[in-house]
Image (tube, rainbow, N blue to C red):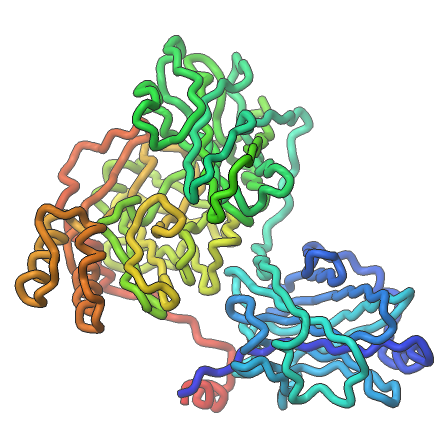
Length: 599
C-alpha cells in the first residue's frame, strides 16, 4: 500500500484591511472563548509571528487550541498543523483563508508527499471562534486525539512536530497549492502532557547553580568536558525538588546534554578540582567514584519537577560535597574560540519528603559492540535490564518510576521501554514514536510504574541510517549512537546502571562467520569498529546482523552507584523473552473505517 499522507490543519487566512471584520464576525462567539486561559503554549517560529496555546481534555479525548498570528502586511495567509517528523510534506493542516470576495474559510486539509495541499473530505478541526484586531488573527478550534481519518495525524503522548507555513498574496483557492515552496518551519512539543496536579514548592526553597567555569570548548566535533566542584555547605540533609538547565545565550546548539554526578567518597577525602576533557588520560584517578547521578538534562528538555512525595537527597552528615559536571559539547563545524558557562540550577528545601529519589540508566552500553548498517530506513537496537539484575539491585517492595528521559544521538526515530514480569508484558514504561534527538524532555509519566525485584525492562531504539553510506557504531561521539532511558524513581537504591550489549563471544563468532562464509575481511585482531567497517552491507549481511542481535546472549552492566558491578555472572547471560505480549488497544474507529485503514 502506498504511504498515506499525514494531515496538516492548513489554516489559510487572507488578510485585507477593507471589510474583513464584517465577514469575520459571522464566526465570532462571545468573550468566553476569548478570555479562556490555556495551560500550555509555545511559539511556532523564531520571530514569534505564530503562537499556539492548548489544553488537553482526557475526558473527551480532544485538544482545545488557540492560534494567534501577527502580520504587519495586509495580505498574508498561513497554515499550521502536524506531521511525523516536521516536514511540510505529508502533513495534517487546517485552512482559514479568504477568497477574492472577502469570505473566510476554515478547512481541514492535508499535503501529499510533494507538499501539495488538498481539502479533506472529512472535516475534523472544529472552529469555535475567530477574530482579527490590529493585524492579530486569533482562531479557537478543537480536534479529537484520533479522528479515524487516514489523512489526520493521531495525537499521542510522545513528541509532536508542529508545522506551519506563511504565504503572501490573494489566492483564488488553496487546493493544489505547493506549500513546500512557501516559507515554512516546525517546532516540537509534547502535545498530550500528563494530567497531573501542579506541584507546590515549599516556602523555604532556595537555589544554587553548578556551571562550567568559562570552558574554552575544543575545536573538535565531540567533547565530553568534566568539571569538579563543591556543593554549598549543607550540614543537614536537604532535598532537590526541581532542577533546570542554564544554557549560555547562543549556545543552544552547542550543549547536547549534561549530567551532574555526586562523588561517593568519604567526607574527609579530597577530590581534585579537575576541569578538562573526560576522555583525557591525565585526568585524576580520584574521579572514579563520581558516578551517582543527581541531575540529567538533554537538548530540548524543560525543568524537571519532582512529585511531592520525593526529592533527590544532598548534604547532611557524612555526605561528600564534591560533584562532577559532565557536558557533551557538539561542535560539528569545529568552531574555535567558543567559551561556555552552561550548567544546571537546583531548587532545594530542608523540608524532607517521604522518599529519596534517584536516577537509573536503562538500555544499551556505550560501546562499539553494537552497530547499525548503512542505508537502513529503520534498524532496531535493544538493550536489556534483565531480571537477574533487578533481583539483586531492587528492594523487596520495589521502586516507583515516575519520570523518563529517552536519549539517542542523531539516527534515533522511535524509542520505547517495555516492562516484563515473569514473561508477561505489563504496560509500557515510556514510548515515543516520533522521537527527535533535538527534543529530549524529561517526562513525568501519567501512570507511574511499580518495578519489582525480578522484573525486566527492555529499551529499544529504531534508528534510520538511510542517508549514511558508512556503518554507525555505538559510542560517545555524536555520529555514533546511544539507546538509553534515564528513569527517575523512588526510593533510591544503589543500582545505578542496568544496561547490556551483545555478548563478546557471540560477536567474535559473528565476525568469524562473516569471514569464513561471506568472504568478508574481518579479523580477530581488529576492533569491533574496524570489523563492522570492513563488511559490505548487503541485504543478506544486514539480515544476519539482525539475527545476531535478536538471539545472542548478553553482556550486562549491572552496576552500583560507585561503578562496581553487583556480584554475579554477567557475561553470556540469556536475553529476556516476552512470552505473553501486551495486547494492543483498539483504535476508537468504526469497523468499516478500520478495514479501510488496513487495506
